[in-house]
Length: 411
Image (cartoon, rainbow, N blue to C red; front, top):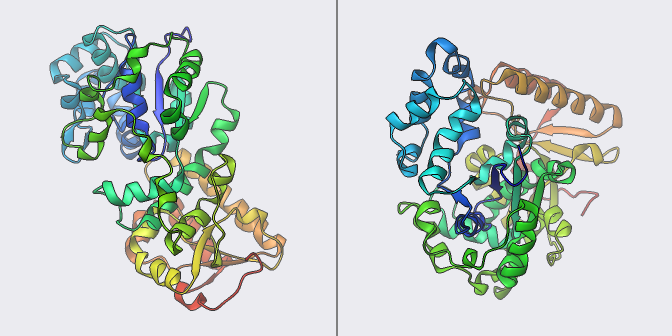
């Protein structure tokens, strides 16, 4: 596919400007963009059904039902795109069975209905599924927008109904998403990164460079987001209302107008790799670090009281790459994130996990782990349960609050 015709995927952390960027692109005369599809996490969650969905004998009946069942917070995605089940069926009936056809029964039809020639798709958490995205769309343009993580964490806590009201809890999500996707954007030649602050401060220049990458001409109409916002910001997602107002310089580096308290310093420490990589201003840490690995959203949700108590005692769970630790250092494993029905993907994760544990033992790194309760253990597939068992054999249990008062060689 010609680069000027290839799909566009917009990714980034929540509250980093993904909706603003998507709406600017949707304001282009050649590009459409609808609401978030959450397509790739939906594929992963329903991996065991895909073979039946794509089977020739069932096509496109089960595929139509599969697409129609995609919903976020009880809002069917097809309805948000304005696509009926009959239209999905007709579209798929004219296509060969494929995962691409499933997604495009929404995005391509929406594009055609608007009289445009190229579609974009924006779902922030697709940043966790870049390998699958690239496998299905080898020529797609992937655009990442980043924003100072302190502004992102503060905005998530204040605006998003499905996240914690503690900015530090969101910082762990921001850090994990960034670290997990960093390698892709360093290697992938069809990807592009821009910063929210630059987009707001220099919108025309920033969009001109992005349009060069996308191989479309820049259009001044891209700066007027009011009309296209009805497609990218559904009415029930009230936290996206600001996109109608367009650019607002007051939202840039808003955290700097606050006193740099312990919470801001903690976010800065958790997200220090991202802050350094994009030249944001660091804050001097004032904590005893507890070096940790696999600080998942589930762990933060379930153990938030302990995390808050640690901070109250000037201790902080700091994400790290355990393979970079010196002999005698200690790392605490907070989770074993191996689950789901995609056993090929889980197997690759399992072997990487095992090799990492063995390497740490050989290097003399002390392995600790937090207790995995009955419910989190049950959430893992059998490979995840096996990995958790191996971790418990090679490491030793630790209670987070018992670490208050302990020091680290990496303060």
